Length: 199
Image 1 (cartoon, rainbow, N blue to C red):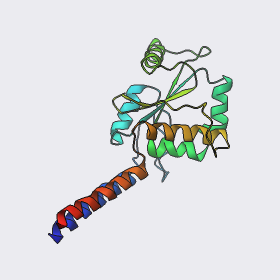
Image 2: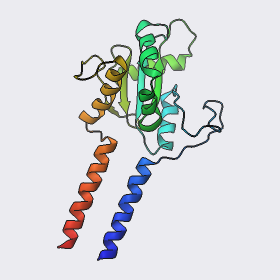
Image 3: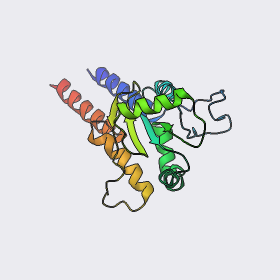
Image 4: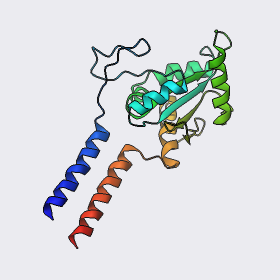
């Protein structure tokens, strides 16, 4: 019986470690950053849902964080760029927790008909009525949550903290499990199983 407990704990530990330690992959394509000299996976935006879904599958179904935005020259986008996108907190989300996807509709630059069609189709599918807006998606495109960027949160002082907190809280309040919730659930499950097996 003790060997069964040991095996169970070892398997639980393997699952926990695999969830924590996701390997850094060196990729050699023109679309992805050169990672050959880096020890940390860089942050970069996917530009189509298909590309984001492929990256999500590579990362064992990691959720997609889709940004719907207007032209990059617009004031709301410039604020996100200046105060959020370049922060270590946001980049950490894009490297460790989500697959970033940017869907932009720009009047000033040439965009293919396919890009415009995808933007309009997805903004209707996920009921995006204002930009910039984020949506969190499963790897198959199923909506998980829509973070409310306008909601004021207690104890949050900067715009970057406001956006990051909105993203994290949205998934937690709609049933998504944060990393710490997964750890807690694993520990509780393990303790209950051990107590049950000791009877």
